[in-house]
Image (tube, rainbow, N blue to C red; front, side, top):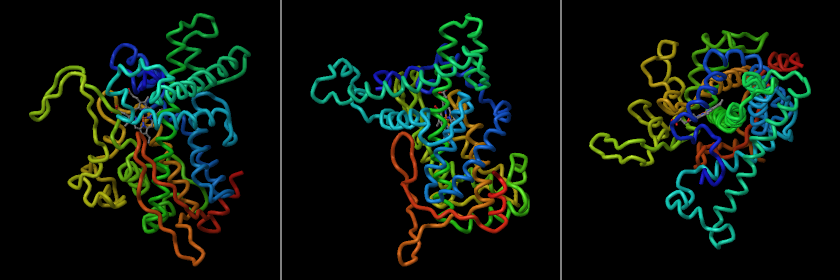
Length: 407
Ligand code: HEM
């Protein structure tokens, strides 16, 4: 299905080999743990944009999170400011997320088990998968080419653009007219995969955070007490506060564990015959890591269904003896998610900033009874909490003051 959808550009779906290595090297260059620190000012400014939007449209919190996370990645990768939810890149990205979520679900299409079906003509009765694949391919083509052509046009016209894509094109000697097609392709692919793999995943974790806060006022209170002590009432949190905020860090970890974004991981295939604990695994077998099960193993995480950041703490500090969910939720080995540092930083700064100024409560019905959402998530390649309502309000006069100051 992925080849019918024309997804050979996606590093996450490439087989191990020279082409994958070239892409992986480029991703590492722009998203490694040191480099992502230079993206903190942009992440901080997007966290502040989110605070504004939550203040002005509290009931629209889901769209606001989606907007802030998406805009952050697009601006970083393409360098074009994203001011509203109908921005053309965001619309393309939204369409491609739907396509990816349906089309990438392992085993959802019979052609994955019987590849010869790919030769069935599109008009053939039952060939819905071919029509869908063609539709999704067009969406992905837009995602690959529209922003790429815009950045090229910026460079051609001498317009300043310091984005990741512009840097990659410069490195490929595009302006000198010496860029080879392969380098251009890597720049195009890496930029698209950063949005494709990074935006909805981080968005899902942020939704989980809101759900957990609505259901657990006691967690909010503890987090806010920590922020009050470390950050104080007269400013907003910053990245420099991170090491002094163990409870906030524990919330970030618990969000990744409680509702894993990619519950069954990204499917892998064995490149040679193998054996694991007496089971023979033939070459080419599809192997899936059940991340959900690992992150809900009661031996590592007692009472795994509960949202309990305390499980990561001992004597007021992060406990190194508790398995860190980021060693599971982002995959494993040489294919481990290369965007994990970017996403982790983004979730941290948003969680800390929101908790510092807002209370999140369940919405109430006409009798004033709280409408408590269920802690349930969708099944799919990516998993999201089911839609729920949340009442977002500035938590104090000083919080309101901070929000008003930040124009
Ligand atoms: C909460 C956020 C995120 C989660 C939970 C997540 C999760 C994952 C998982 C489970 C994999 C598969 C690893 C494996 O095959 O074992 C993966 C791969 C990947 N992720 Fe992420 N990811 C997130 C954010 C990001 C971001 C922000 C970016 C981009 C900057 C990104 C880029 C990628 C890429 C390119 C791959 C493919 C790597 C390869 O196959 O070599 N991800 N991610």
